Image 1 (cartoon, helix red, strand yellow):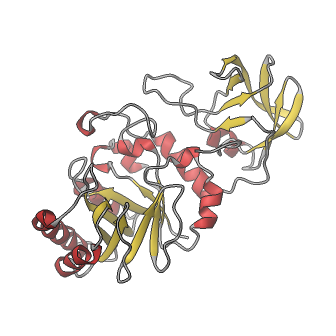
Image 2 (tube, rainbow, N blue to C red):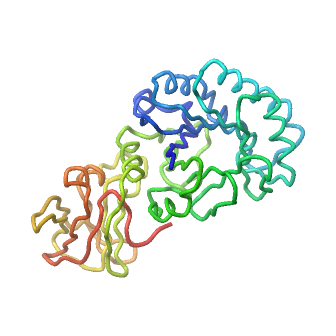
Amino acid sequence: MQFGLDCLGLARWSKEARAAFPGGYALGVFSRTFGDAMPGVKEIINSGKCKILRVQLMWSDSHSFSDKDVSTLKAEAKRWGDFGQHHEGIKLYLSPFCEHNLSNPDKYLQIVKDHAPNCEPVNAAWKGATSKKFINEVHGSNSHAPGGRYIFSFDGSDMLESDVEAIKRRHQDALIWFGWTANFNGVTEVGGPKVDRDKRKAWPSVKLLASVRYVMDHTKGAVGLPRNWLWKSHAEDKGNGDPRANKPVLIAPVKAKSAELLKGGHVVSSAPYFGPFVDGRSRYYFPEWGYEIAGKNGHVPLDLSVGGKVYGKVNPAFREGDYR
């Protein structure tokens, strides 16, 4: 499986975040939706970390595209085709429209092919038709393999709130398997308050990128919790600098002074009782990122104890209990 990160807002990522792009991963971007992505793409390509690139050439908030977009489409396809010619050894996929509702996508995919013959067109539909001629692309945690050659991206579903392991299995035959979390588009949470694109500031940190990569590169292992328990590997991020954001939180129907993670019966991380959740369950916030706890303890599941009693096992880097 070829993993990638769908860094759609890369044009506005920090230099540190771009530098943290993982070697050997495919890169996905919007061409101009968040500003011109090409300078950032060049930076990553020239570092030698990436040999596979997928570009979404155009976006519409209403998912509406037509012949009125052809002149822009031709120019963008040629621009990225020229980029590919000047960067030998790069495999370049071009999607004319991200999440379209078209019934005739092959018409526009052929335009891309004609104006960037060194690139492979990709059909990224929303409610539109699949292509029988070109590579298809599906998005989100509820998507299914469309048949034939295709690309998968979490785009629109936060992988950090999803059953990543199940979706690895479901899309194991994808040409590229793109990870995505809300910060890749400059917002803290999927479904959170609407923020105009030009005002977005919640771009990914180096640690967030590391945590995303962790759940892609590692397996969760044998874990399990009782019904009505939730281990969130990444607590809610409200964008206000809360030190609890993106670190693990346990939400459980048991109240005690603290919750602990144990390895071989020894406490490796502890979280004091914080207060009630909105539904009355108890919250316990852990002090380190989930991937940090996992990495320090051999990348294996850990026992979860509350009030001195072990109730199950978790991998601190992965969500467990229920998913979105």
